[in-house]
Length: 257
Image (cartoon, rainbow, N blue to C red; front, side, top):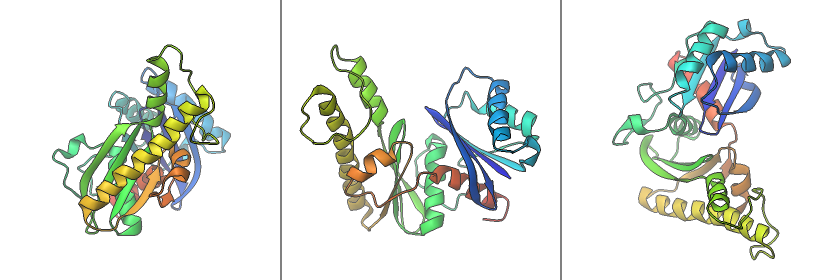
């Protein structure tokens, strides 16, 4: 059983795979203050609740955009599962040609998403990850990762609007009934939800123009289900693209991908 871990700025998303199928998945708050022992206790408790013992884990792959937490998860993997994790980096063979000026600046989650999507579709792609940040990645028909776009995430915008104003409340990120808000809360929700849908569509159109070829548009990330229904350009939501990409990359690295 493979354990795939994606350490993001807001959440640690992880799951177990058996025969290439995602069997269980969990989402934890990212806490750089936690030690390897503390995360190990949480992992062990949740795995046991699903009937999985540490000895059933046969491999671990790790993607991290929080460098301070990477050593803690490496230590946890070796102590609890007795496996040195495969840590995603640009040095791995992802099947993509990286045209990023400095590939080491590329977030490992963006790399995994692009590699997984290209392996699945073998076509030009725009991959949107709606998480703490809203990121876009562009892949050509030939499998060249050209680069992308990084914008503040929807939650960051909502928090900033609340913290930087005297009277505006913090709101739930749900679709309002109308674009024209009838009260403060629905007005904020309209600006956030429809505003970010417009941001996504506007950037996708510009990326399509620069690519010069029709690209398939995929969305993933914790907030993809909120924005995708309001978007005119997102064609498919892949909620577990990063975890599935980690599983595929592990198999590829071990000669089975």
